[in-house]
Image (cartoon, rainbow, N blue to C red; front, top):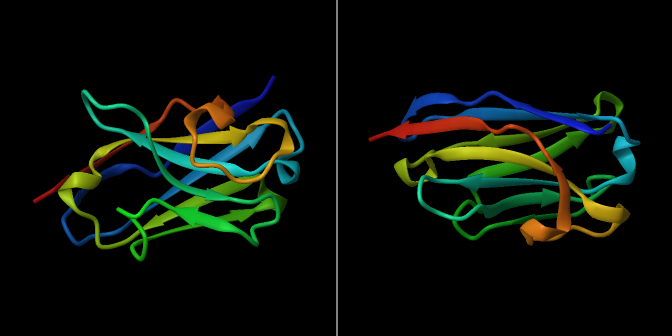
Length: 125
């Protein structure tokens, strides 16, 4: 049974920073790319960032490029999302997902098979 758990969300003022963490258990973590997505009220889940199995390849949504950094520590079965210069429009529930079938990084929600419960990020203006 694969379990994914996110943490690190909270309330922060615009311009501030947060670091999200995600751990995954139940499969060999280093075999799978990982992704961060977010979902605001009334909107669909959208891509934020993704990282390859060994961390040598990353991709970001244009809206977060230059502000967010994804990283991973395979020894700890963990992936992180460092979020700087936060904006009110970054407010959402942030989800971590595991890539299907040991394939390459992807921006598509359907490319990920296991998700955590999400962690709320609220940015006040």
